[in-house]
Amino acid sequence: MTEYRKLRTSHWRAYGAVAVSTIALAGGMVIGAGEAAAAESITGEVGCINSTVTGVWVQGASSTSGWAKWSVPIVLGGHSKANFSYTLNKGGNYQVHVGCGGTSKSWKVSAKSGWVSGSGKKFRCNDISPALQAAGIAVLKKNLTQGIAYQTCKVV
Image (cartoon, rainbow, N blue to C red; front, side, top):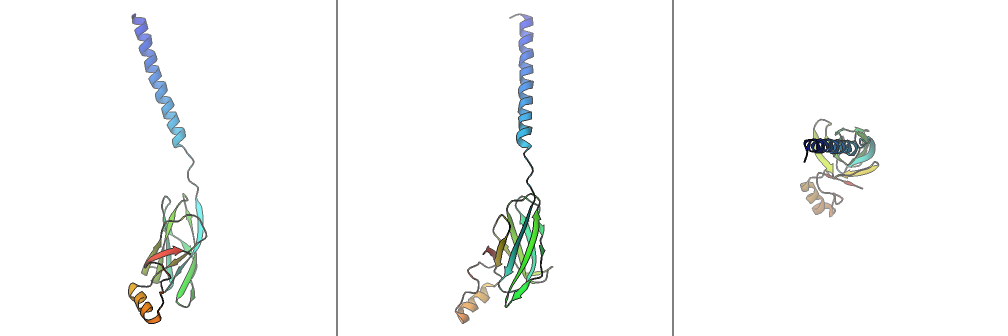
């Protein structure tokens, strides 16, 4: 092979490698440059079975977590409920952590939901201790927990 031909062949190989690298990089930029997830405002209702709602924390799966704005709870008998709102900066799944009883700074019971998505959810949270539940069954012949595990919130 002549020197000129060797030089030309190596030149095109180098040029081809640069071209392939550039295309791959540009393709990666296009693929990786997907649109950012949109913020999503969520609203809902939380309620404690046995005491007053004292706070609502929203845990985002892919969004920033934080304190929800919530209304003063409505108390009906031993039950209470409050409306809440929060903006998930990237949307997606979230959990609610609800304070039942105590104060806004020191919850008596912290109950949390499973992962959910979307707005308008109503959560009922069980803050009845296992001992109180057993007493309710023994004395009242009734399960006061409404089928919700202790320290959890269920979408109703």
